[in-house]
Image 1: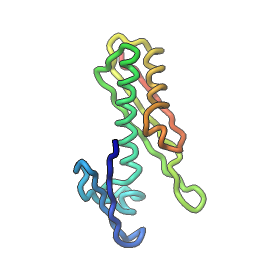
Image 2: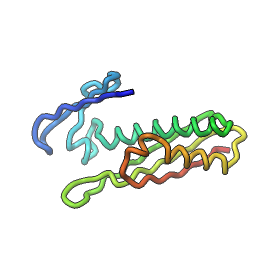
Image 3: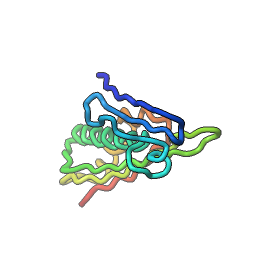
Length: 141
């Protein structure tokens, strides 16, 4: 399987503007800029999109791991917080923190934690990122 996305950038780093589009059309000329990436402006940015991809990938991976253990979640809610730090002369994504809350009827805490850790390690986006990945996983009672 191959999926694609594209970016168009016009202008300098601080005064320029760009758009992002995805093959599916979910993003179509979605604006991004220095302002949206570093100053909280309206629009998206690469780190936000990586966070969305990681949260979605992890949630699906956790569902698969739970299934292997004979459990089915009513819900899995994941937030991925991506940290972009200045490193040397440039910037690097240095960390991602996954905050997970799952409602799983009848699940034991130890089985849930084992599934969450396996999902964190096995999620394709986790494998892609060269960053420290931490997690807080809560099983709702």
